[in-house]
Image (tube, rainbow, N blue to C red; front, side, top):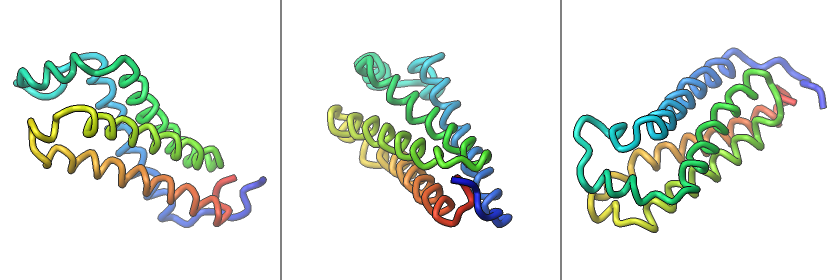
Length: 144
């Protein structure tokens, strides 16, 4: 399928904002892998260190799929490729799995409070918006 229409200027603004957001997510992944619990701030608590040490081996892979998939979504949108839809769906699914496990299989909410769910909720919402956006621009013929 060929790209049938030229996107409006706001498409590029949204894509650049998404790419900046996705780059921040990738930086968070890098910090997680490179620095471990020290990436949580200047003074990670004993709970933070213990939680980090208890993460299952697959967790880092799912985190990587979520962040690299999000960045690949942004790149696919810049290139106006339909793969952006699939990449956004994969990234969103990985994000939900990652945070779902964190909040359902650990006691993080009891230990740190419900506020710990707020930023992950924002991340999931932005992932959902990315998927919606990719589907919308595909339907408009701006990506193919």
